Amino acid sequence: MRKDLFNLGPVFGYFFRKNDPNRHTNFNLRTMHFINKLSMAMFLVGFIVLLYRWFIR
Image (tube, rainbow, N blue to C red):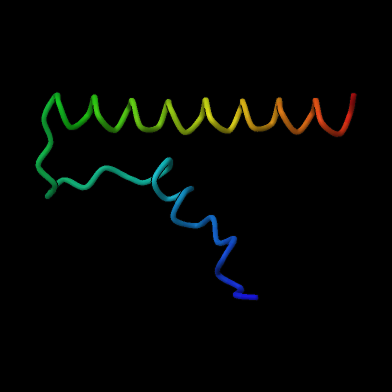
């Protein structure tokens, strides 16, 4: 089995990276990234709820 299969470094890097002053940004790009982060967070919350229902109850 590959060791990098469960590497979560890029995921945490996406959520907690510093702003790059050389990167061009606008309202649409910031909105898109906010919606992506929100959808990933909602997915993780839903997945945790499913795991809770399967294993705890």
